[in-house]
Image (cartoon, rainbow, N blue to C red; front, side, top):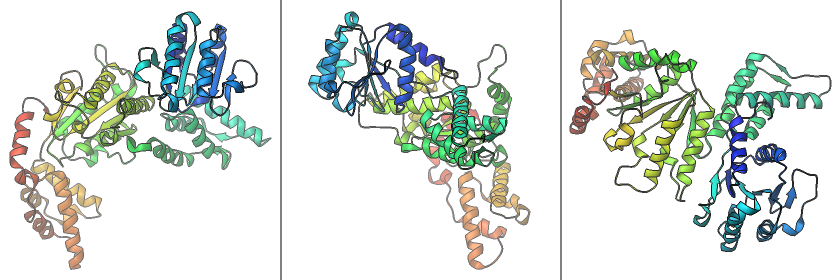
Length: 497
């Protein structure tokens, strides 16, 4: 096995080949990495390995032989495999456009039915491999894991050596601590993407320095944000920027060391996640960001709004890919915002139920240090399966802020905008803002600053009081819903404040 290679990939593939699984659905964009993995798997077994593409035809990979042009068309290569009498493994690259053809499906089905005697394994390799219903009984998915830390360190060494060969007499300058931080930044990317970012950092000056890290991180964020499903949040608020939530802060602080070290106290499981619910605008999203900031971990945001796809199975595949990326980023915090918008109720038997099943299975089986922070405005819309004990370590209720917390929110918002909190009457503002959420207080501060600026005067208490008196907070306009939510949370959730 090559140094740094994820051992589970090779071990899992060896089991599948030895079991004579007839069809493997290999969903990946890293063709060369998959070819190398298959070579390391089949060569010790003495099995021939072939690669087919519509551009080149059929070529044997374990021996330096020219491509077989007579097997260039899809139907020709399938008939060739069907007729072959020597057991072999065939990688069919980007074959998915032809999986809708009845003749191709029938040939693949006959190859699969003959597999116990012929011993062939056909691996369909592509970014997506939609398996037709006729073949699902014969096909097994195989998705290579993303590169681990050791494989990324080996990549850094190879790219440094490659640069030195191009520039004789010179070596890439890099401190060990910078290399380690760079490896952390590259985690969660495919090997091809990691190589591109690494070359960007090395080839401009032949050095890996602290100045390269922000640029690599920014490029990585753009790569992870393809399609908008999984984003990388850079603005992770610190807990000093979150007013109130004393119980939540204490709960997280008690568990911080155990999660960071990966070593839970004897007899305890490591922290796995929390669910935050409560009144809109009271700081659930800010608290989710603050968890990552306080624990000094990367924050990934999973957006259920862009998860769903009209094609069968694509939605679950999108979710699995996002969760796989989160695991490769571990240790990290995964923020699932407004989780109720993406999960099904009992009445929904469509994609929502399959997404729920995929998420619940992952939550139960994951071993990577991914701390889930889910937020929900309408927690009563969530399926009971998600809320039962054991899914989340705790459910916290974020209520409207009390007088002391409102005073703290005013001070934070004023300081954030270059204003001196001591220049206004914070006690009066806390009384006048009874029933206001943190978001509503923030908007009152913004509006008061605009009013003062328009009048050409410094911000004063009266500007803020005027804005508060002109606003009807959510707790007034939707008093029944807020009261109902509070009744639900009583006895079901832990107060966050």
